[in-house]
Length: 253
Image 1 (cartoon, rainbow, N blue to C red):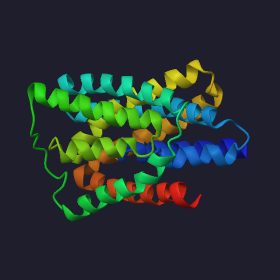
Image 2: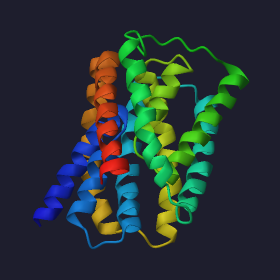
Image 3: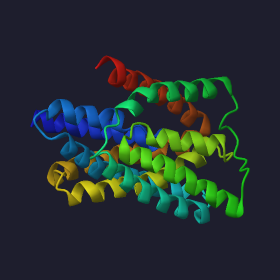
């Protein structure tokens, strides 16, 4: 009972953080692994994806009520993210992601430094692409980060946000809305593989999903209410936390 309460609390906080800038897995995955050490890792990851897709889906719906996105770009990008996330999830059952695990902290440090130095980064919404070029670049981002999410995963939402701000000219709020749509596609792809292979604890996942939805509603509401500046601060906080976590996993664990 205590473990269930702890997992519910972790899911709520994961939903809250993930709804704003991504990175909910920083909270939810370690909670599952520490409280259920006898369960197969693939099953814990599958259960995490099942809970996560509900929280991310609700956050996406909340954002889309207030933030306009270009669906002609978002939908093909989400499709690319789905296909390549499934490929990544399949590949990770055959190839170890250890080298990627060690490279990730250095990539995140670069993201953090760039965001810290560029004070105006993500403050204004000035899209730099349109039409077919925006669609193709969106699909490229969806494919690359989708594959990463299926193969490894930490910080997927934050990477989506950074790329949409840095290369597409979106502000943090719009980037977060688009990232949620693509994140739903990634979670659906990974969940379809884990579910098919029997690696989901459905009842536990459903309980955590309810808690994560509550956190997602609160997080997305706060992001929309407080705007781009608040999302930028949360983004930096989560990136720094990701640097610490991935450094520990890659070099100290």
